Length: 404
Image (tube, rainbow, N blue to C red; front, top):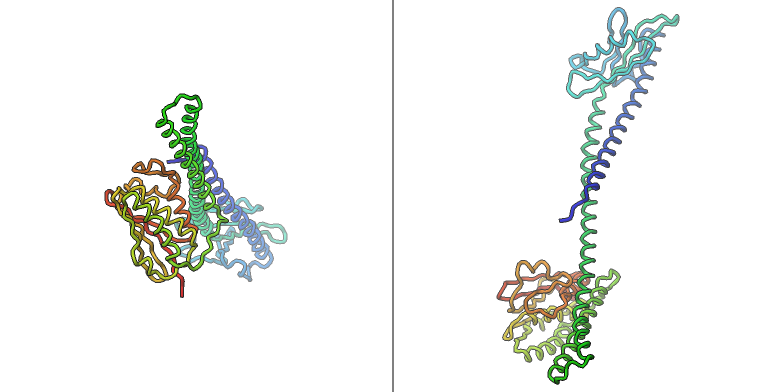
């Protein structure tokens, strides 16, 4: 399993705390702005008390409590709080700031209720002669500030985890693609190098005149011919797979009669089966299918790949048959054989490029089923497999029917 490098984890943690502190700083800026607004209000209240001895308009202070502290004691001019809830802890702050006079005091003491904050702004009151009369205190509950921070913390943490997960998923996908690419290049090199090396070794032997026996010469020529065909087959399949994986590749569909597809296949594979003693049968349901709506050449190519694959794994007296079922506007084609089957370990990999079974497949390129899967993808259909070791394998794929 691939993991991030240690420095990547460090960057992730640092970025998390960087943006977390940015959120804290934002809350602090909001609090500072409110501080300035409250100081302005407390100065306004102080000016009104100095001029009129009272405050007539409480509208600017609707969410605040106004306390006026003089030598005679504390007067509650206006309160936003229930008296039972009033933050008595403020009085300590008030008494401490009373002697400051001539300066504005701003504090954030706790109230008696847990996690409830109250902001206090104090401003001295002087009469027209400059005599100190007392101090006015503007108190405003700001519980929403920690609530904003908690909401930001939870939302930010969740969003950050989602972003990290998406980045990790993308990184993992890109890493897997890179691994597939390198493996793909290595497999291509192996597929091409093996027959080339075999041909080169034999031709060097023949060119040196070391073989004079006609039977050996004939066998060597046969090996060269076989390896050349295998090399050509691998190159053509690699080119075909590359074309199919091109996103610009189009698969135009048309109305196709079943016999147009299956009649040539029956003629080709029946004669091939007779030569090696395999029973090949196309059930009557195939000929009774309504017209198909597909790409004829690609469907033929798909069937040839699946039938070729079946031939590799059936015994000499084996059986291969093609049948179908229909449901609504779709046909499901079934290619069944009684070969060796596919093991559970190999089954998830059969559509991968260059994956080859180690049973009865010494010359396969490992690209046939990968090409079949790309054809199915291009046709926007589905393909799946059912298999049982020792009893055989059945490939299923869907084909749309033409809507009359």
